Length: 117
Image 1 (tube, rainbow, N blue to C red):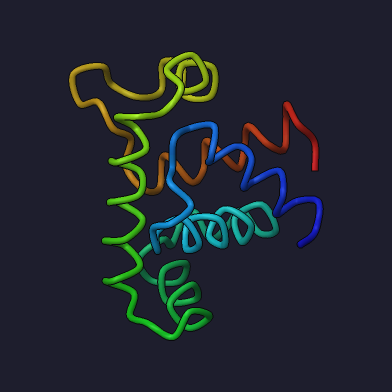
Image 2: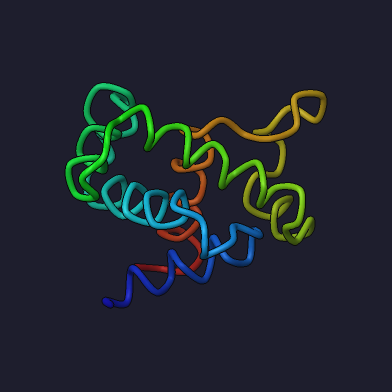
C-alpha cells in the first residue's frame, strides 16, 4: 500500500466509513483516481464508476450503490468534528449526507491541501 492510499484510508476511517463494507474499497480507489486526475469528478457515472467497477469485477451501478451505502453508514457513526472540518459549509444541513461525488471530491481535496500527498 502506498503513502497516498494510507492517507485516504486513514481519512475515510476517521469519517466513520467501516472498512468491512465493499463501498470502502470502492471509495478508496475512487478517491485515489480523482487525486491522480481531477477530470474524473466531472464524469462520475460515465467514467469513474465504470473504472472502479472494472478493477473490482463488478458493475458501475453496484459501485455507486456500495459507495452511497458506505457514506451513509459512515456519516451516522463518524467523527462529527472531522466531518465539519472536511465538509464545513459545502453540505446542506437540511440534506445531511453528502452525495457520492461531493464526498469523493471533498475528501480528495482535503487530503491534497491539508495532509499533502
